[in-house]
Length: 517
Image (cartoon, rainbow, N blue to C red; front, side, top):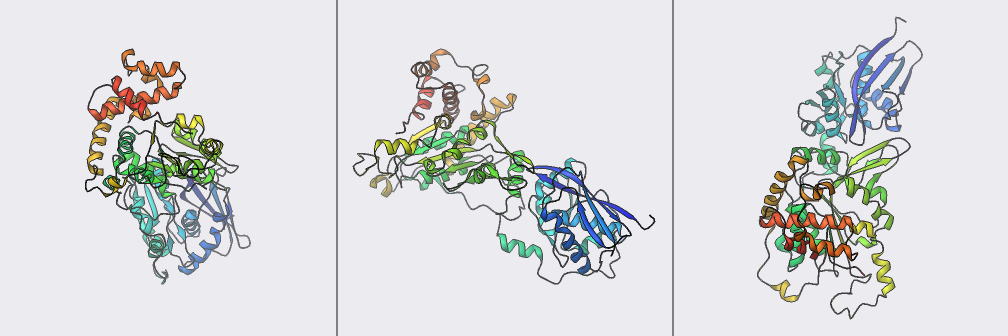
């Protein structure tokens, strides 16, 4: 057995946002030439052997013409993704004596056939897992280096090609070859575009809609869910799109979580800084449950609810969504997480978002004002709003009617308050909430649980008398009552009072009083 050689390198396997450090073991035997990858690899990992062989040859270090066995351990953990390429190449070349060993280094990059290093998705959660496991030294493609460096404590080195990695590790540079093609980093950036968010739209652009603006401010200040009902063109979408601009910037912890989720998204380019603005997701009403909640074959991918984590999920034309898809939102609305189970693996993603739904007053959208042009029957209206189930609506704190805007409002020279003015009040109210709720590990009023509302934050009967009357006549459920109290606390916070009074309860009930056909 004197001809056998052995080496190890490290990489990371991601299931959801949870990363596990994987040992990439290589054994080079004396049998006939072969290249086998073991340890529950998916197809993209199995294909790595051909990418590694070509990349090594085109880098001036062809692989040994003998039996090569690569094992990814723990062998019971599913492995998916092309980011294992560089770790496999490093392990094989170390076993072959070409590359000096570096057993504590984590390798995360895809290999091109000419030896160039290509960036991969999910770098932020992968590097975070490596650092947490005690392996801060990370080698990535140059295009991934800025995102990897966002992880505190990571010692990141970015390279353009396999030859550069070998030379930096101490290999003999005499025969090393470098690709002459366009930089993989440049190709990647041009294909995906920039990852920066556009400027937030201004609330001053919304004409009229005084109740809508007030409800939007309440939603932003307390983290409450919102339903907007009105005719087409009234401004429902305009209002919803301006909610993220009213929310406070994300703190370090929230920004890291959000950036980690978006790092897995194939639609955006690499991040050079943490995402600080709350995200805004607006899926089409034809979206499936997998698109909304996450899913896919193999290891599940995050859906719109997770991409909206710490931000806003806007469902325009909400009654046009499939009822089963809408009802699937009830669990993440309560828990702030979504768990997706598949045969290959189960993944859990964060999903603490603000839900904003918009709906027309009827299928044709003309049942407003005198409704002279509406030809929808009562049965059609009931069927239209029947998609919004009672349990889902019970979780929506604010429900308001958005009327059609008048000509005078549209042509008026005066405008309402801009985003910056309202956002300042929202930030002040959020600061008050953080101070009050910090002992309980909460950040805003929407997160307050029933035990706290009936305990330390319990209000006297003279304040909650209206709630008792509505519950006695069946107009409010227990969950609805608790949500009214949360909104009342937000009204008090915006007005600078230390606790809600009876008028604040009435205001909260007013913003929940809209009846659907």
